[in-house]
Image (cartoon, rainbow, N blue to C red):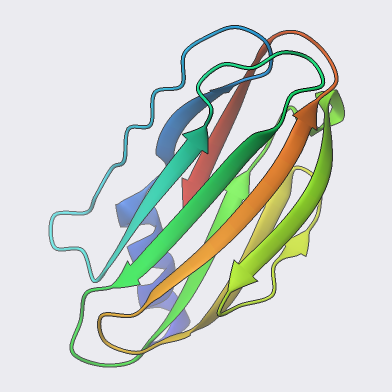
Length: 135
């Protein structure tokens, strides 16, 4: 898939909005999808509330909905990274890069295949954390 189309697909899917919690506040995952999505994405945050020192898991996924192999990028935007201690980052089938405020990876996905990034973190300060995902 040419870079222009991949970028357009990423923009069309847009930001998958979700709010995670450092101490108290609800998590509301609200996935957004393009009109005709070649790739769909989702973001899951558990638990919905925690305490300073608790553990939060953030999982982003992307699925190839086409009938051909697609080059797919997946990322988690984490603007409040300074108030967290990231304890683990993993991906399947990709190996994510952890740039603190952005954790991302990319790979070629077969038709119907799914890619995921999993981030485990510990909040170090009270407040609400806002995570976004792109695919």
